[in-house]
Image 1 (tube, rainbow, N blue to C red):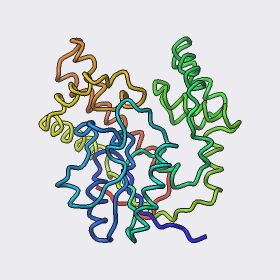
Image 2: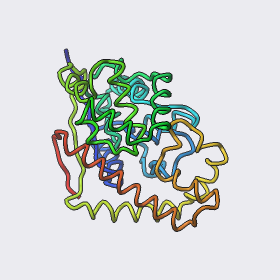
Image 3: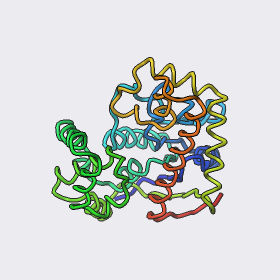
Image 4: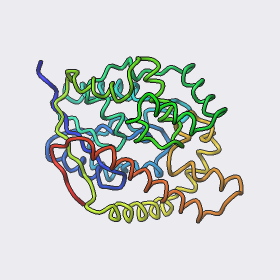
Length: 292
C-alpha cells in the first residue's frame, strides 16, 4: 500500500506551530489542517489564537470554523473531517500539513486507530459524568486508576472529561486506553507522517510567550469576544464551554471576580495546559525537534 505523506507540526501552545506550518506550506506547496480542538468553532477567534487572513499569507487552512459552539466535537469527528481534507489536498497535488497541539486528535488520525474505540456513546458518557457528580471526581479517577493506571497517571483527577473518555473506551471495547494505543501502533496506517516537534529548551520560555500572547489577546478584544459568546450560551455548550481563554470569564460575568483575576487565571490555566502538552509530546517520537 502506497502511504500518503503528511507533515505533522506539533508542540505546546504559543510555540510557533502556525507560523512554522505556514512557512513550510509556502516553501513546499502545502495546505494546512488545524489540529486544534477549539479552532474548529466559529466566532471563537481571539481566544483560540486562530491565524488571521494576513498571517495565513494565502495558504488554505482546513478545519477552522467548521462547527457552531453548540455542537459537540470528538476525535472521531476530527478524523472524519481531517481525512476528507487530506484526500482533497492530495487530489490537487498539494502536501497536507497538520499543525496543532491537540495530541489525542492528531494521534488518532495518524495512527489509524479504529474509530469504534473513539465513537461517541452519549448515554454511557452521561452516566459516567453523573457518577462523578454523585461520588466526586477523585472517585471516578480512582476507578480509572484501577483499570488503567498508566492513563490515570497522565490525567488530572479534575479533568473529568478525559477521565470519562478513558473509562468509556475501556467499557466499550474491553481494553484500556493504553492497550488501544498500543494496538493502534500495530495497525497499518495509510499515512506516512514526518513529525516536527517544536519545544522550548526551558519551560520558562513558553510561559513567557503565553503571558505575552494573553496580553495581546486582551488588546485585540478578547473580553468583548468572550462577552458575545457568553450571551450566545457558550457556558452551556457540551464541548466549547471548556475552552481555556473563555471559561475563565464566567465568574467575571457573574460579578464574582475582577478582570485582572480573569487574565491571571487564563495565563495560569494555559501554562498548565502547555505542561500537559509537553508531557504528551515528549513521549512521542519525532523526525525533527526544533528548540525555541
